[in-house]
Image (tube, rainbow, N blue to C red; front, side):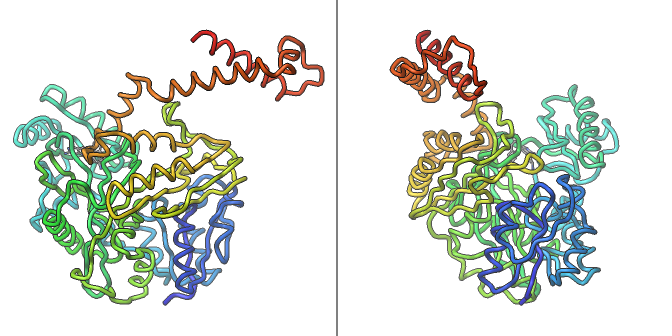
Length: 508
Ligand code: MV4
């Protein structure tokens, strides 16, 4: 086993990997940028190296700087976490050339999955079910029209280099095709420096379900069940769960065996995830493969009882998988909430700043993977994921109830978070019934807009309460209309706020 590894990441995932290292007696080395000097991963690691300014291009994405730290720190392997360099085949290759083990698949396996058309060609040849469509780059709009005609409208145009919905266009009828192709191409060129686009038949109201796989370097491979990731907004996952409420044992076996074939086709090693799109008749189609440890890996860890980071490290060190497929059992239910520093009442705008007060939930059936602490300032330069709150229990309902309880306990002061959104999601009857497609969250947010409910009522009550407190506080009336002589801003702000609150309460 490695004696020392470098973690080329930050935030909650760097902390997650440091924990695995400590449990396994491995020393951890981390890197940090100017704005991460006080970050939690720097505090928790055995060694930390400053690598440059805040922009990721000059720090967490800089291959030369990271390999240099590996060299001077004596790290034998690099865990890339997720995001940043985790799916960069050039980085994996540079690690190999520098004699440092990349904890993940080979550069060659990453390259098969890096282009969607290349992956579709490989999977089609292996007999994997794909969404009907093309697997070659579209030459022009004439060819696009021919293929769209064959598969039938509506169709999706997708960028071969794509991800996160970028360069993706829904085309409902032939006359929209040419313009859609042009805009998909230019968006793809902009985002990925590659304007290759292909066609897929449109799957209406899909579910997004993915299978976790693990492969060692001795030709052993297993699937670890599915995660349902249908609750998302703008291609950002918000809540994930395992198992999926719509997958039974037979469907799990079929999807799992398909996922293993996908990974075998790419000569895949280490941890990976095969994404499927599920249609309304519960047919599943290969979408893409993520060649990294994913944000939502904890729900799989809970229902399988395995530690995926331990296993990644053991696989990378050349050990064989310590179990077979028949040893894997799915037990209980786990749901993960991604806590972001963003304001759900202001169009999910990022909300960086200092965390002035933090009260964190724990107790039965709760796991929390967090990168924040009280007093820490959330930088605006990176992904705003603060923490993951995972609830689990014997049943889906137990997991929901524990999360609901934990969300009442959770208090993050000083910044806005999306914690209130999870209270709404978990209380929703459709969510509770497990009736969740990728349209769920947009619909929920529409509903809230059309029928203002508890939030608006709470604001009214708060305004009335503020009015009553102000009326009872004789000191406050004195300062209301007078100039604040000592120029104390908090005093003057307070009285303006009180005036507003009174006016608000009286209007209602
Ligand atoms: C689709 C689709 C419908 N039909 N492909 C969005 C991101 C990307 N990775 C794949 N995506 C989709 N591909 C066909 N042929 C609908 C989506 C989609 C989606 C997929 C997964 C999770 C959330 C989604 C939200 C909107 C659309």
